[in-house]
Length: 367
Image (cartoon, rainbow, N blue to C red; front, side, top):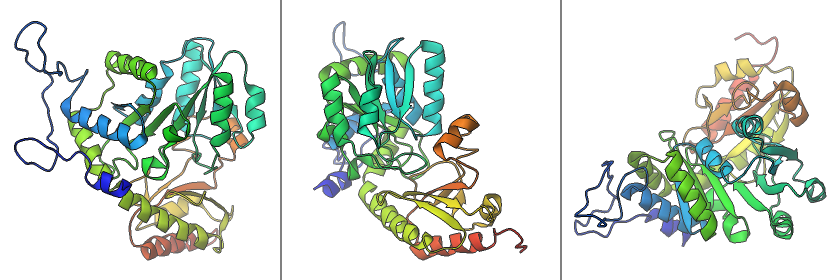
C-alpha cells in the first residue's frame, strides 16, 4: 500500500483532469472583501503547492502537520525555536557536522545547552537527564559513522521525564521508518536528500502529531519565513513518487558493496547499518584518500547524499569541517574516513569503479 500511496501522491482532482499537481507561483491572493478569503493570502503563510506537499507528507509520516522549509538546516532551526535559554537537549554523540555547528551557535548566542551522549547506552542517557532537560535529539543512523540507535527505550524514557523526542530521519525516510507512529514527537528531514532524490532541490521538512506543537511550529514557520518555494515543493512531490524505487535500489547496491568491501585490501573498516544506501569506509593508512578521489570515474566526489548518483564525501574537511579536531578525534572522524551515498546505477559499475580507484590509491603506486 505504501508503494501505491507514493506512486499516486498528490494526484489532482480538479476540473481539468490534470494528473500532475499545478505549481502556484503567485505570492499574493486577492479577496472579494473584508473578512473574505480563499484560505490563501500571502505565499509565505500558505501556498497551494506547498500545502499539497505538506499535507501529503504528514500523512506519510503519520502526523497531523508538516512544515516544508528552505533547507534541512532550516528545519532544525525551526525546531530549536521551541526552546528557551537554560534548556538542555541531549544529542546523539555522532551526528552531522552542520547540526553540531548550529547547536554550538545556539548554545553561544541563546544559552540553550546541548550535551552529546552515547545513545547506544540508554543508562548513560538517563543519567544525563536533569530538571533542565527538555528534549532528546537523535539520528537513528548516525552521520557519518552509521551507528544505528534503537529508538524504543527513548520513547519510554522521554515519556517518564516529559521530554520531546526529535528524530532526524533523513537517512531512513518515511519509506523505511515512521518514528511518529512508534512514539516520537517531532520528525525532521533534509528533504534535499532522499525525498527530493535528484540533487536538484534544497529543502527540509518537519512533521508533528500534536496539535499544540503544530500550532507553535506553524507560527514560527510563518514568522521566520524560511518556507519552501512552490517550484521546490513540486520537485519534492515528484521525488516522492519514486522514493520507494530509489531507496530500494540504493539500499540493495549498498548492501552488496558493504559485503564486497569487507574482502578488499585497503579497507580497514566498513561502517554500515545494513539499511539505507549510506555507508562509510575507513581506509588503511597506506591508501591515500586524495588519490582515490582523483581516480573515481563513475562515483562522484561531492558533498550530499540520497540522490540517484553515487557520491563519495570526505567528512573531515567537508561535512564536519567546522567540528573542532578534538571533537572529530573523539568520534573517530579521521582523515582515513570516507562516506558513500550509494546511487541507483548498475551495481557492477559502482563496485568496479571503487576497486580500480582503491588499487591506484596505494602509497607507491604511480599510474
